[in-house]
Image (cartoon, rainbow, N blue to C red; front, side, top):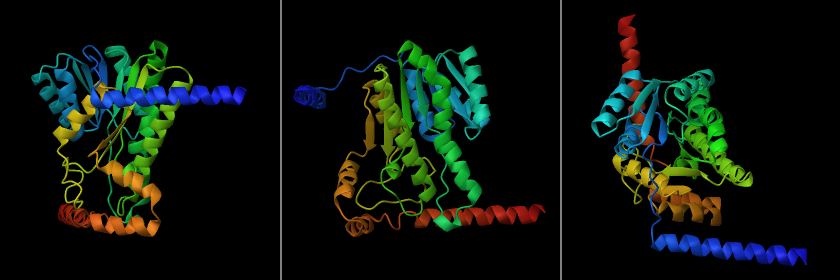
Amino acid sequence: MEAIRDTSLTLGKLLYYFLDSSVYKIIPKRKKNVAGEIVLITGAGNGLGRQMAIIFASLGATVVLWDINEEDNMETCRLAKEKGGVQVFAYKCDCSNRQEIYRVADQVKKEVGDVTILINNAGIVVGKLFLDIPDEMVEKSFLVNVLSHFWTYKAFLPAMIKANHGHLVCISSVAGLIGVSGLTEYSSTKFAAFGLTEALLFELKMINKSKINTTIVCPLFMNTGMFNGVTIKYLSPLLKQEYVAQKIVNAVLEEQNYLIIPKRVWFIVIIKQLLSVSMTFVLAKYFGVDTCMDLFRERMKAKEAVTETKKKHQN
């Protein structure tokens, strides 16, 4: 009898949540008000982080900017204030350093207050073939792209749990859903960041902290400068960072748990689970995934060659 009762209850809940989500596909959720919320964005000095900072500032949020590049971060601060941001704070922080993350986090709590929306956006990419990636760059990628998420969550989540109010945003990637040749270190870190935040989502629900939301973002390659030279045939040109930033902010305001950009990538993610590896590889070649990093690597080699030449001249 207990099994029948549990099954019936589970089916009833599944039906309710299916209808609930279906309604919101037709009628968008009412967007929450973020005025007065304290939004912290890592990697805010340029690109996607800068664009999100500008949008949140224009919505009346208190915006906290973290970046290792102090000059770029101050420029983001200036631009955010120009767009109407009244409370914008910039901090230099190396997100590959656990002690520094905790130190700057304590500083933010004292000087600004408890962060209520945390956006882990800082990231780096090497973009070399697996055997060509220096060991130290593998470690650096994991420090910035994954482990920094652990430390920022540990720093700011306790206050969110105490208040049962907050929002965690993980900027992962389509490369965190589908392994990409030439991006082994990047894909690895983005898979890990996705898994961490998804596991944390369910953990928060298990401890009845349902008012703490999570949003995991998986965009295709963007024109932020990080992926200059990357092309994917038939799927999408490089996404505009302003477009992706607005999509992310909307996802936070509507409390979406997952955001894949563009939406048609959902089809590939699902198909990947159904096809054999050989069939998946045929599709990957069709979309040019096997060669999408070639031009990127050529540009990186040229850049490294220029750097090496400058060093020789200096010596």
